[in-house]
Image: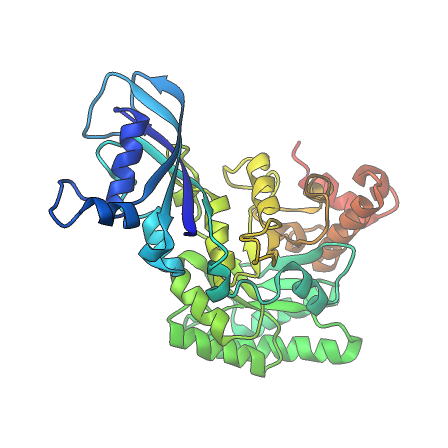
Length: 415
């Protein structure tokens, strides 16, 4: 029987073997006491199974408060598995199984979900990305370099007409990709239908003049019927991308839009710090991205090198590389990493070197709009940084003959 596997880092005032059995029981057939209906046969067929326990350290104090006290807190890694008979190939119920009522168990003083291994059966009912890396690059007409992108800034406050005017400056500067900020949805000061019409009028006119169609990710986050209407409007206007906030709409919302729309899904993980910031509780990106990709995410944010948040560079790059791994042996569509959060021309060289390919979107907000040479200078500086990295030329050397890059390096490089 195929089984769903989950790997955790666990700390407990009791033995890790005991903690693993408590989690396995809580997340399958058991409860806090033995019931008559939980026969040996039922437990054998439907109970979670402890596959591995490995203790790695001990401490005299707990990492997180817990009602169950002890004199020694064991920490290590455990692996549990569940039969598919329990949840079928339902992503939402798989999530409830591996990340449900276990983080608050009294016998647990730290718990992180590190990874999930999905059986191939999930790829039969979960479609995965419709475009992914390869399809996005083809649609955008970009090859052998990153897609250069930005975010509408100020995040909120611009009218539909003002948004369109900024878009015009950006696309005339040569930008490949623009996205709504996650805070800009369908508010009274900038209604979605009017914003979409104004922006697409500018983009379509530019495409008619130049033959290049920049990609704009419209934030359709909302109720499911509202998202479907707005996705349809973007497609009718000639748009080529829609955006959603993952934690706002959930797996069900993402799956619904994937089934409804024929446009790439740009997926923002705002709120990510709730799950990632503590080493003692939460869910890793490696685990989350598998759920999101099975549900249909084409693009996924991973922060960026030297970002404005707390995430370290190694974790950022680990997340970006994870999007290039297969979710199951049958689900091989790779999602597009999106680097953002304080990115400028400065980090491009290191990003390409660390990732070892250029199939990604590089979003710079202030790094483009705040460039001393204006929007066009900002776009040019990122393009020049990418060109230098692809050719293997150090950015400082390339900047000697490229004024926009020189200005960006002198302006944005930390002193």
